[in-house]
Length: 433
Image 1 (cartoon, rainbow, N blue to C red):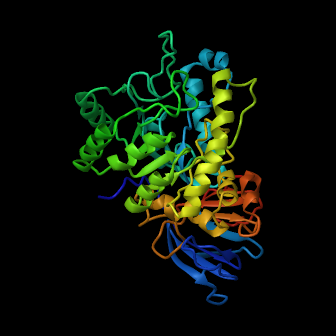
Image 2 (image 1 turned 30 degrees about the horizontal axis):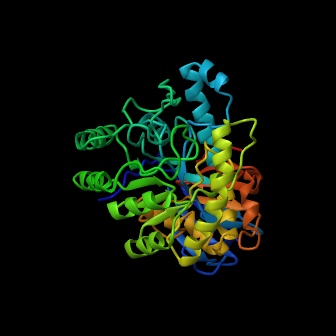
Image 3 (image 1 turned 45 degrees about the horizontal axis):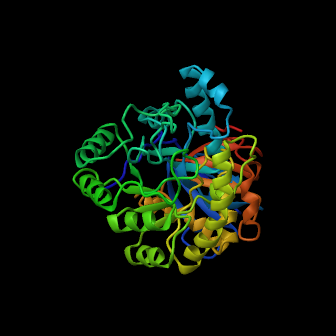
């Protein structure tokens, strides 16, 4: 079964990009003096330059000499309606319209950082996805979990220990609590009805939640397996597991999830299980390795962050170096938004090569979202999602962390960012800084 692929209307006309260095996402060596031709929203040629071309007035030619062209990046773990370090008094005082417009601003900011496709793992409803697909707002194509599921007292039980409810700022009206078999079936069916692209379960507690820890077990293996079986009866939505402690990670893998989100304490047995089953790790190092200002977060969160950042650095590095499949995900919202490609440098620091890190953010992520037929590489037939930069990412992968380094972005054949005026004469696309 294919995944949902919301599209913006295709651009009319043809676009020819010449002279840049092409890193196509396949893992092949870079192509110097490359040519990419786009017709509407699809790539029709990507490879060595074919010559100077003819004087066809319907083809707009753009010289990218000195620049590098990469596939549009994915962030497979974001929370675009969340800002964990925001002042809660300000958040509580906001009108619903302010929250919606704030989320729209964050969504655009994420696109401008080089993320042309994102998976929001709880917080947004399907209206945001539709608004982007219709061109109402600018943002990455979205895959949505809508809610994250856990038992009572688990990671997404939004109650303080004294029972006071603390609801998230946005999200659909579907309870995240699943305690019984009937809860599992009903909630998954409600999420599918609400057009979820992925089902997220919490098989452990977490760092940011006040009433549990990453060592606490959450949704059990039996319920994970039920969820996987239920989605197989529908569109085959992947199941993603928030899993931080070692035992909950293994329960999620044995239950059949497509991805382990975080995986901070993964052990040798868990690594072997992931390699055996082809389970993808989304390590969210941007969040894991960042210890926030203690003045901006509750004390329990700061204390857990200090401890679990050290655990994640050690254990995730072992998984990466063992060859576990990795996809880029940041947990933005728990860490600041708009610097998503910081994750590439973190993955290289923990053992990936720069080329493998790029693939984690492109083709590996596309496979996880079941979009590899359309996205993830720059090849003929694929959607024209491109990121253009003056940085050589194989020599300076950390340089992509700064959104200013992303000079231009093409999404589905439309120019949505062009800070250097590389595309000044395009009549049929929107060039936004």
